[in-house]
Length: 152
Image (cartoon, rainbow, N blue to C red; front, top):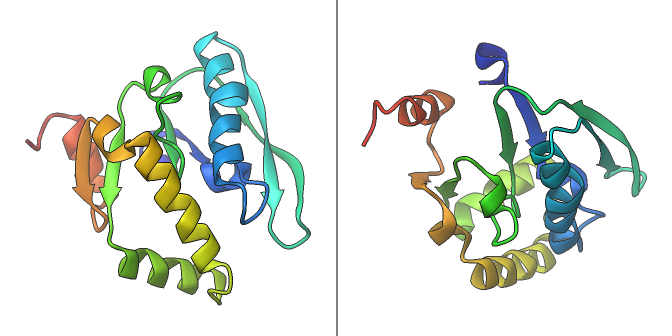
């Protein structure tokens, strides 16, 4: 989608300080990214390197055009007023776990992460804050059609 639309894409996983950092990453997104962007400021993000367990300089995000923010912790009570549109992708635990394990090669961290997700989504009610709820198998074309008003 980024290539076709020219949008800037932010991955919230770049903001987590490791496997215990869901809340910290979500807070960073609001405080250091969304608030300054809404004020018309450019933002230099940081990016967590999962192999060396530390932050490095990340992307430069300009406050113009379409910015897509994806990942766990993107939709919260603090972030929602700063977002134009929020789309929740619904996936059961089995699908989330399989995708994460495929991405990372093992699941030694899964139970701790799942506990953070469960606590975050119970507290924030992210799915209820969303404007749209789609199945996790939704494609970029599905999302674009939805945003263009081509889907109900």
